[in-house]
Length: 482
Image (cartoon, rainbow, N blue to C red; front, top):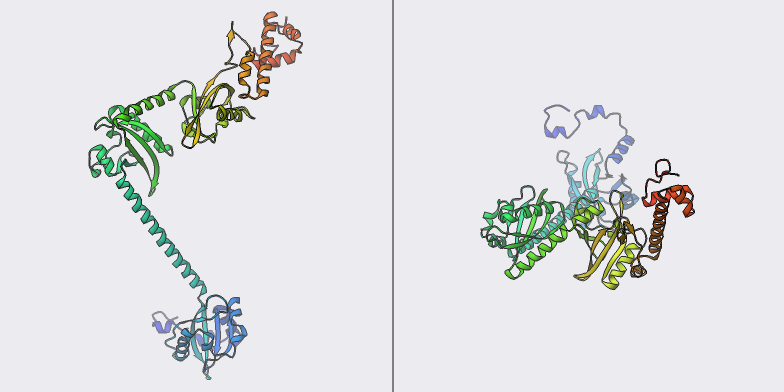
């Protein structure tokens, strides 16, 4: 190439005669077949003398059938004029143009090919090279389909935004959108403006906690903290700074454009319902504060809510860790304990003094007693359970520092609530412990004599001592061997 040459000269080799002189016709044919999707040799009348195809589909489409046919007869009717122009313009070497035509296919869509022709030799033969446009057509079709899908999705999102915007404006309850990081109001609906006695625009940018009375600001702060980490926080009672009226707060978190936001629904309480709501709030606070574990379980045995004492019992850090988890993860011995508990709850609506085991997250286990009751929550029952840690046989009566066995009536009450194998095991353990304590008392802590009195080997006796926590169970460091 000569630098600075015109665009017309740049379309051709500057020294083709010298540089391409070594190419014979076979080489040229191979080169055309490998670089063009379609290569045709056509005479001056437009009849195809020879053809080469780089694609197997194109070969099946044409093959030897095109040889001897006029090129114009191999295309669809609407593109025949383009073939006429292609043949006519092939003699004008200075203005070679691409012409796109369609070849009819026996099955499926027509095959689009883009052709260019150049006349060579003394007998007016024409070399026609073509590019298969099907990959480009498929790409264009996918692009059009993607654009149409984007348009449909955009329309759907726009319509949904219109609906939600309309609901936001017409909602009778106050709705606030907060910046999760700063707790400042981003947007407020007209109902919120009425509730707080200010225009929606004037509410934007205000601190959320400042909207509440001094006595409720800590509650509002705790509500925001819980909303940031929990999927939803319901029915938190607070009082407004404007008129000291009561509201219930419901909140949830979401992300928009990568920024965390909070949506807060505020329901005003009427005068008649305010007292009841305050009572409900007081009851909830008392349940949260009682030292015994309390948990509410759904019909599918998954925990809905739990107080702080339950979290301590199962060694969990926050309520989020237990919410939605099955109760048997922490309560009940392996087997049928929980099945028996829930079957009795469904049959009798309440269960008292159900003995079982509570397991902690750190691997500890503790004997507990459960008092449970069922209630209808919507269309499905929910179960409230109070769980009291009893320690070792903490549910027994004591006399003089020694445990007394249950009466027959007490054991009868547990039938149907506790599996029989558990009752038998519990009774056996209690009797063994009482016998060992009595033997130690009679022998004045002489373990060798106590083991002989009970008909046990010393090794078996020490194992049982360790089992029931009656000393270290080690003859070398424990009680006397007199």
